[in-house]
Amino acid sequence: MALQLLVAGGGIGGLASALALAQGGHRVELFEQSAVFAEVGAGIQLGPNAVRRLQALGLADALDTIAARPDTLVVRAAHDDHELARLPLGDTALQRYGAPYCCVHRADLHGVLLAAAREHADVALNHPARLTQIERSDDAVTVAADGARAWEGDALIGADGLWSVVRAELGEPGPAPRPTGHTAWRGLLSQTALPLAQRSTQVRVWLGDRLHALVYPVRRGELLNVVVLAEAAPAGDARDWDQTTSLDALQHATGRCCTTLQNYLLAVPTWRAWTLHDRAPLTGPAQMAHERIALVGDAAHPMLPYLAQGAGMAIEDAVALAASLQGADGGEVPASLQRYAQARWQRNAQVQARARRNGEIFHAAGPLRVARDTAMRLLGARLLDQ
Ligand code: FAD
Image (cartoon, rainbow, N blue to C red; front, side, top):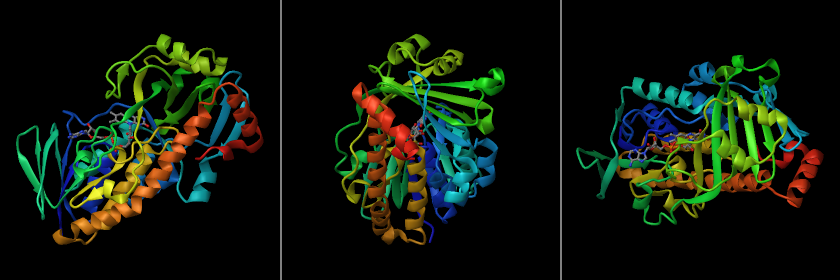
């Protein structure tokens, strides 16, 4: 029996949920606060776990038109460019995991999900529509956007990101997100505009003292995504994913790095930044779903970008949510959402913890940095959770 489902947020988690739920036979009303569906952000790495789910949503061909498939991950020391570790991706990842390792521009992935959601007759996309009110009864949830029109559904899915308003409805939202003291700088380079030696088909990672940097291809290899994560005081609006910044501010935070990395930083025409925030992992399924409300993605478990699994976990959530609601009728919704939360909360908490641990390794300083570099030379990329 078809349910009427309300989804707050039109990011990767919200759009993937809307699509998966509609493909499961339900009708979906999605609300996105932005006037245009956001197309900012830079690269996102998608592990085979995420790619497999996107393929299951029927997006394999669309993904092929936007993704780069890097052949290797290479880790180097940021101060002298010395190679520390190397991990094959490409065909090796495909054979080992049954799906490729992909790198995409966030806007491209968002565009693929948006196009598929738009094409589905059972998805209605409302924007700009900022969810401001939520009311619950035993058999329905009613929401209002900007205090205007009201919509009623069998369930509300909060895919409204780090600063989720839906999360507050679950009774125990926990402490607010807190800044981690790190800023992420990002920029894009056209590969054809670069000297041959700088073009790349690899995921390149440099580990330094209290910083790490990544360069990897996106948009079928046409662009290189350059990201640096380093300690810096929050600048601008903490909620803004797209802060204006400068090379000077970035270099002030990184200090001296090897010439190879410097040359990438110097080549980026425009730098943007965002302030990283963290939130404690959930401690039980009731914080992820209660009665007729459930969370997906960053609303439930914001991920630090040290494991490259933020979008991946949101996509896994979306597919698991749809599976739990498959064939449910209105009366079965609370139990189905509980099943979903039970299936997901621990996996997400573990991935959050692994991302934090990677962050500690990536940003080790002083003697710990030396120990890390030595251990990595001996153990290779096995030291890192991929
Ligand atoms: P989000 O991507 O945060 O999406 C939440 C959505 O909900 C947003 O579109 C927001 O506008 C909307 N929303 C919030 N409150 C309301 C409300 N009250 N009513 C209606 N809508 C609401 N990750 C990276 O690794 N690299 C990047 O470069 C990167 N850039 C990003 C740029 C933007 C603009 C955003 C929003 C996120 C970015 N991310 C990036 C994060 C990454 O996309 C997410 O971690 C991951 O995809 C999880 O997505 P999500 O849908 O759970 O949350």
